[in-house]
Amino acid sequence: MSKAFRLQSKFQPAGDQPAAIKGLISGLESGLAHQTLLGVTGSGKTFTMANVVEQQQRPTIVMAPNKTLAAQLYGEFKSFFPDNAVEYFVSYYDYYQPEAYVPSSDTFIEKDASINDHIEQMRLSATKALLERRDALIVVSVSAIYGLGDPDQYLKMRLHFTRGELIDQRAFLRRLAELQYTRNDMDFRRGTYRVRGDVIDIFPADSDEEAVRVELFDSEIDTIRLFDPLTGAVRGEVPRMTIYPKSHYVTPRETILGAIDAIKEELKGRLEWMRKHERLVEAQRLEQRTLYDIEMMLELGYCNGIENYSRYLSGGHPASRRPRFSTTYPMTHCYLSMSLTLVCPR
Image (cartoon, rainbow, N blue to C red; front, side, top):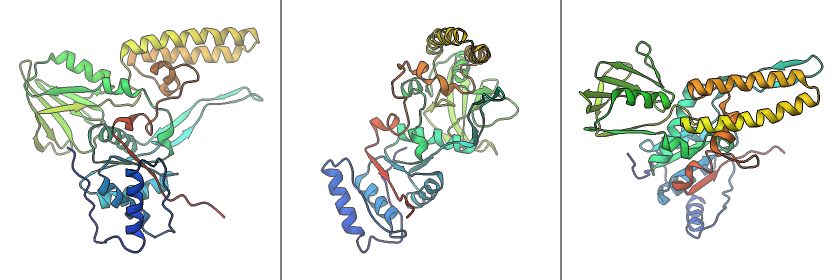
């Protein structure tokens, strides 16, 4: 539920801060695209910007040059706006090794990565807040400029349901599977659901402390409850609920089928070129890997490294820009973007 930004601090703007706040707000209201706030370390630039956010009441993106500064800014803004949607969007890789090939030894090194589950949840929560709330302040690192899935497809895949709605349970569970949720009646964790008779429990991928219980009476949704997934304690009832996909790369099946046709067409051309130039090992490796990915997409709706196929899934041409968090998702809601405190060496 959206609230007004309300800054909570025992301090008041002092020194040059009131003039800086007034100048920044004047620039925003005048339509200036770029403004720069200068100040030494410890001069209260974050507090100054928090005052601007409170007075402007606009959804905000704060971009930091690295994850360390992003974490610091997230903590500070969280303390300034404890009752608002302060979120965190940075790279979710704890470890990442890209694909590599060593010609001298004919060694191909597979891509290897370790994803931080908690940061992935925070990224999804940030996306949800930016789409649903006007009191959203998202702290992002440069990860936000990297390609994501198609936001139009992401929005279309959301699952909405309301109390009193008539549903088919099998179709409902099938929709959850399309959102890449998996059924797990034993280990109930983020991104899974379980079914017990006429009760469906869903652990949203964007939450780490609240799950959803849908109770059916025949084919009618009788109640929608929020509960603690650890203790099972009910926290309340809601009249409606929206479940967001488990991944930014979720895609409808018809789009996947169309993308696979385009992938096969390009694969055919690349294999012909490689075989013509006697790169048989590379051709065999490319064909094996691509066909495996295609099979996974047909069976599961996704594959490891599906971001490599984002152009096909979004329907873009080879030179098109990929969708990314900082420019695509905020377009309808976010009007103020800030870049804070970049320390440059002498």
